[in-house]
Length: 342
Image (cartoon, rainbow, N blue to C red; front, side, top):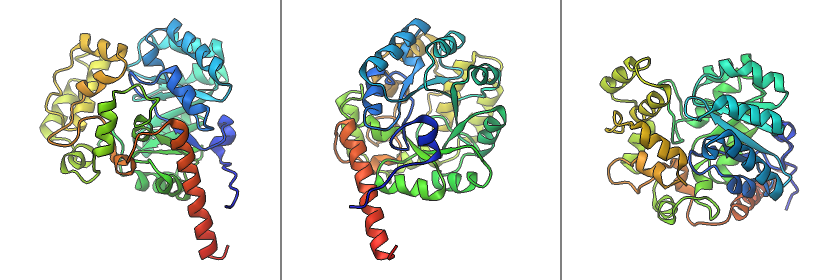
């Protein structure tokens, strides 16, 4: 077996062993889950929204550091995370390894984050938004393709097309997200020019993830070619609904509008049903309410997951998953090196 040193601009930026990042999860991005990921050599992500309050976030940051000394990120989802100013202050005071912003324009927070000296990563759905974050001073950007679940954009492209196009235009380290979940997609993203990968669904189907076993089993059972999943992830929004939700932008609170927009982009018929009280329950839940809030369309297995369900055939520990992904990638590289006589 050849020895691979997984050194990229992302590993150098964050000080991690592998160029692999855990995605941010509303309701399930806990300290314990993030620590489990970081201990493997990848980078765990603590979702501030899951911590509920600034003091809760401080406790979670300290909890991660009691478990492991490896690097992690703190996700702040703009427009959905409560107490953003307080959450940022805690990140500054605790001198976290990195802050990740997402979902909405980070313009009003960019100067404060840059002044703190903490590494700043912004997650976006289009190349233009990545370029905008780079101009604001982001140290790296995550580009999410259509293959992923969650927030969508009318100008979003499939993951590999996005990355191949973005590397021509973005100078800061670029991290690929959306439908990546095994050794081949990991390597594919790196060979397209990404400096690392960002995993969502793939890590949801691990033993440490605080989702119900039923949802994890749904991910294992799911097929990426299910017509309902294809429609949900790839089809453009219904024009009438999209036009209507855009007109609502300044008429409802930002957090409600973002959820409605996300549901429109996913073609969910209940996109108008955004109860603020239920939104708070979602923030305070341990994960299962996420599935209730974003019910699957049609007949596909229930759960908010991406095309990477096609690579998930069993529920394993986070350690096993990362080890298998890295080992499989090294085996592919060794085989190709022999075939190509490198």
